[in-house]
Length: 206
Image (cartoon, rainbow, N blue to C red):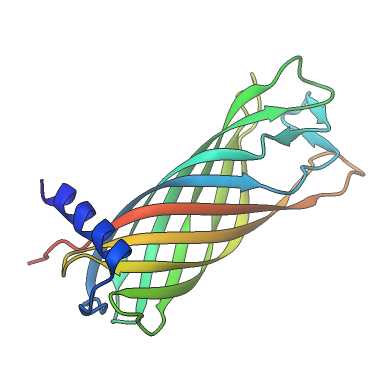
């Protein structure tokens, strides 16, 4: 009931605005998120998914659902550090090496640093940087999971609903070097845009 009320108040504030304070007190923050991921870059021309299997012309479907959770500490009114996790069910297809498209999964996990900008009424924009790892499960028999380092920039808006919760809108741009795994074939840099909506909750501690 409290969460439902928080969501309703946050949406009302987003529509009509409020002269309330957009500052947030230091403490723990937990943010479940839902959104979408958009894949803009191609995978390597040849991609080794196991010791014996190579795909040619492989690519992910250009968009996917995104479910995530962030949990961290607001150090001050302007600065927060959080651990973030997200999951994306994607569709993998290839010109050669697959008879049909397969269901794959992309898992992201890392750390973000967020910096709040001056408030706009009850809303407060923020920017941030993140580093982490991405693991891809191809959904192909005997394939290797592929962890890669990632870096991202993000920006968004926190709309305060109460002292203990806020509505969070966020966009991010994540870059990852994708290794081909095939000798003589160049690796590629992949780019993924994310859009998410979440509810930041600040439980009382102690």
